Image 1 (spheres, rainbow, N blue to C red):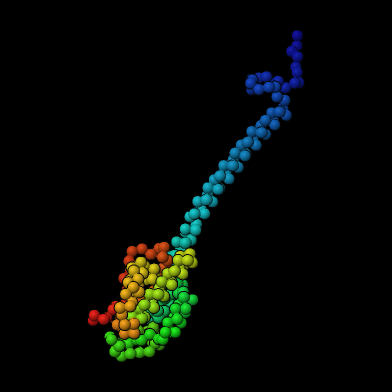
Image 2 (image 1 turned 90 degrees about the vertical axis):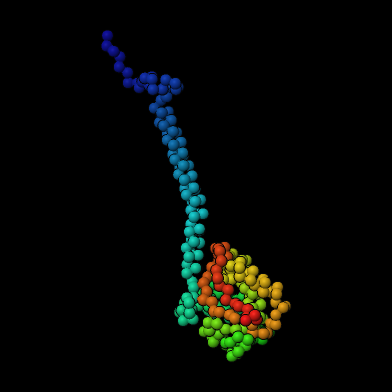
Length: 237
């Protein structure tokens, strides 16, 4: 007796012993469902990795940019002489008796403080101690001197101006400022000067001032000390 051949597909070979009987379309749908789940899982994994990378970059890139910016900022300096200061496009700030890079020169605060000082009259200056060899307040001439003598009033107005610069740098998101102003030692020095101001003759020439050839910085990055005190009380000398 010949075996009866059937054209029907037989799905009872054990492949789906624990599954209900599936027709070919069901199998395709089942495979499609698994593929969809795998695709979703891969997409979710990729999205998570992308989010992680973006999160890391959101912290590292700004820090890197800020670091590079600070390095570029600190590269602004006025050298070691008037000639180098002029070549580096620095500005003579008479209230600091310093050449200052334009990148950290607060023009508005300077003009406000300098014009205010002029309302009280120009400062007294001399090339020698105790007023010997007096000179006028000629900014071009003063900017070319390494050492000069002036009054306690100048010292007080310098400190008041410095505190304004500090304050405005702080409230303007740690804006650049001349490095020597940002150190705490300078602030403490100026605090003592202002507190003791009433014990001095304000218009007596008793202060030796040495030119500063400055550089820029930010308060948040200034650490340690920097020997930039160039004001010397000569009353005892």
